[in-house]
Image (tube, rainbow, N blue to C red; front, side, top):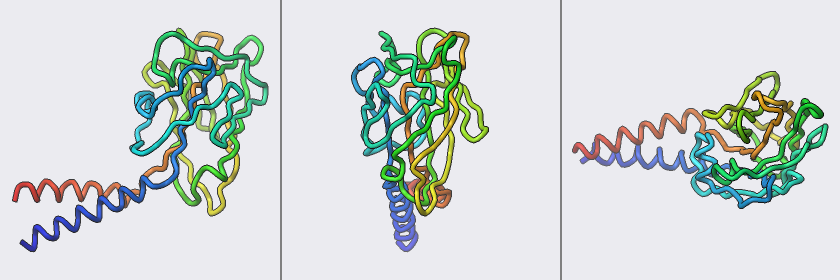
Length: 213
């Protein structure tokens, strides 16, 4: 009986810690470049978000790439926007830069002070797929990543300070063999602390042992 009570306690603690981690602010922004329907949370998961999105909602960002208090400015502007016939609602529409013309651009994401939580580690996703061979390369702090057909998003991590900086700055350029570099959306998702992840595993083990009893 004491063992069962201890297992209940371990499971309860683990569940509490996971809920606490999930309580941090999540921002899912779907760029409606072609003015298509807004994506669902499931679309973000399908496009590569690894974290739990339970309870999250999606913000539709207009063709000026702003919405929900967050905006994305391109130093060289945007070449245009497009909506394709296939793919989920996150993938289907996007803004883009194009070469020749705009070969690359610096992106400034603003509005984060009022959007993200202080002293929190976030996974930061950028989604960049379009038509045939249309992909994007992003450079965030010297970490260069390119989207592909199999990996339509890139993922970075950063930790906010006691006061959240209002902007993030990164570079964006064409990543495939086609001329267009698309951007479908962005996401900021809090990353559970290692202690929370460990307790989740402990809770799962405790649950298994309890069932064996």
